[in-house]
Length: 415
Ligand code: NIG
Ligand code: FE
Image 1 (cartoon, helix red, strand yellow):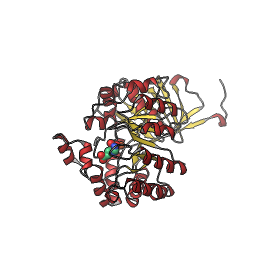
Image 2 (tube, rainbow, N blue to C red):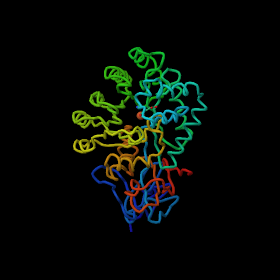
Image 3 (cartoon, rainbow, N blue to C red):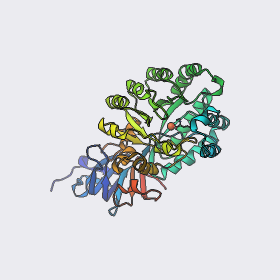
Image 4 (cartoon, helix red, strand yellow):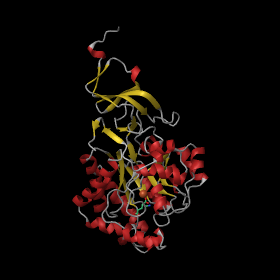
C-alpha cells in the first residue's frame, strides 16, 4: 500500500458516484459515456471524472452522493435569447394566423418596435421581475448558462437598462449570464428613414457607453432586409473590434444578404438562424471556426419552410449549436429541451448533435468552451443528475422533468 502524505490528499467538496456519465467533451467521442462513473467536485470545478473503480484514493470527499445508476450531464446552455423585454405580441400572432407575414407586421410598425415601446415604458424593477421569471423557467429545465441580448430599447438609456437587468439576473440567480449588445436590432421611430444615422448613434454612443460600464460580452446585429444591411453591420463590427469585443450575427434568416461571410471575416463567435445560408457562406464560417446557431423555435413559430443547410454544415465540420431565441415576436418559447426535439424533427439533427448543440457547441458560441459545456476536468461544475435510460431520450421526448438534482459551480441548485 502506498502511504499518502497530507500534501497528496486532495479534498473534494462532493463526489458523485455510481453514475452513468455523458461527458460530451468533444465531437470525436460523441456522448463520451462513462459507465459506473464517478465525478469529484472541488472549489466549484470538476476535479476528477472517470470510472468509479479508477477514482484515486488520494481524492477524499467531504460528501458523497450515490447516483444509483442515474445519468450525469453537463448543464445546458441557451446561447441565444432576448430575455429582457416587456409586453407581449399575442395579437400579432392572431394576425399572422390570418395570413399576415412577420415581415409585413414589422413594416406596419408592429414587431420589434411594438416591444420597444413597452420596454421603454417599463422600469428596471419590472423588467427584472419579468426576466427572472423567464430565466427561472429555463433554470428548471437544466439550463445553467444563458445568453441575454439587449435590442428592445433602441436608445442609449434603454439599451443600457436592459443590459444592467441582464447583469443583475446573473447576480440574483444561480446561472451564468452572458450579455450581448444588440442595439442594431431594428430602426427606432426617431431614425425613420435614417438607418445610417442610427448606426452612428450605435457606434459612437450606445456601444462605447455600454462597454465602458462593463455591460457587454459580445456584439450582435440583425442583418436582414427588415434589419440592417451589410455596410451597416460592418460598421458595428468595426466598432466592436476597436473595443476588443467579439461579434455574432442574426444572419440569413429571411433572405441571404451574405451576412455570414462578413461575420466570418470578423471571426464571429456564431451566426444565428441561417435558414438561407448557401455553400459559400458555410465554407466561410467553416474556415473561421464560427458556430452555426440553429433556432428551430423561430423556424417553427414563423412557419418557415426554408431549412438551414445541415448537410453542408456537417460536410464543412461547422459546429452546430441550438438555442431558444426566446423573444416575444418570432419565438415565444421558453423551452430549451423542446429545441432538442425540434432540431431533430424539423432540421434532421441526430439526438447526439442536438445535445451537443445545447452543451459544448453552445459554450463555443459564447466563447466559453474552455470553462463550460462538458464534463471535463478543470471546467466549472455545472452538472445535471437525470433519471433517464440514455441521453438520446432527451431529444426523443420532452415535457417530462427528468432532473433529479443540479449543481452550478459545484453548488446545489434548489429546484
Ligand atoms: O431573433 N430576428 C430578429 N430578432 C428576433 C425577433 C425579435 C422580435 O420579433 O421581437 C429573432 O428572431
Ligand atoms: Fe434572435
